[in-house]
Length: 258
Length: 78
Image (tube, rainbow over all chains, first blue to last red; front, top):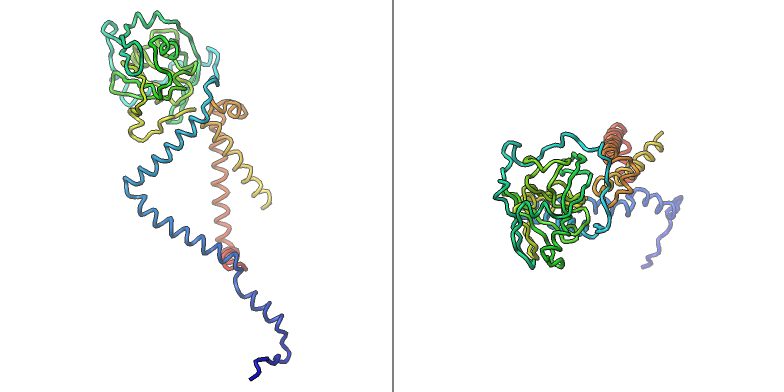
């Protein structure tokens, strides 16, 4: 039997096919919509996993580690933070800590000894008088807080790299860690520790560092957020071991560079 | 008018990225921050560019619901 169809009278098959195609949604559009719907469904499935605390934490920490690496890559050890005239200094400078001002630790001037540890040649402790005898510099820079505010301050002290040189620190180590009187701690990368503006600070605005700003010594680094600038520093250690810090252990980004 | 609106949101998108980088790294990218004047100025620029984008999205979505034809066309292609 012949399968050759007779053309129905008055109908052009070419036009008929075109008309039919018009009724069908565009295949590209159909694919796009279907893809979008699948992606949405996948996101919902993934969300089941993400609302679960531990795995959400893990996923977010992975992003934070990536953030650390990106910031370390972006960090230029020779780039200086902008400096300002004396008239730009905020007076009074804002107090900020996780405790109220009247609960700031009281460190006794006479008893104070800065402990030095880790990968250094000389672990001798330093009295305040010995520290004050080190060469000092003054910087007027902007402190930027992770909370969103910022203020320009005037800090005077010894470049940390000068101190690291004197204690014979192994500058090939990865980290410098700081332990503070109030139980605070933080750690920084070695390139930042060696940055010319990273300072062991003994004075604020020409006055001996008051208790609220970290007596007897804080570490000031204008290349990092305020939370990386520890106050009341009691111990400095050079290490290859990642020791995190007070906020960092609670999920704050470790590098926190600016 | 509509073209102006779309051009505006594209510009706001560029500004929000640049001002975002400027307040993310005001030391490493200080030249970029300086383009906005001072650090705080970059923060304001970033906020208002974000607000402009959110405003655009609200108007954009409201209009698509006001003209049901446009929503149908997005799904069926017609």
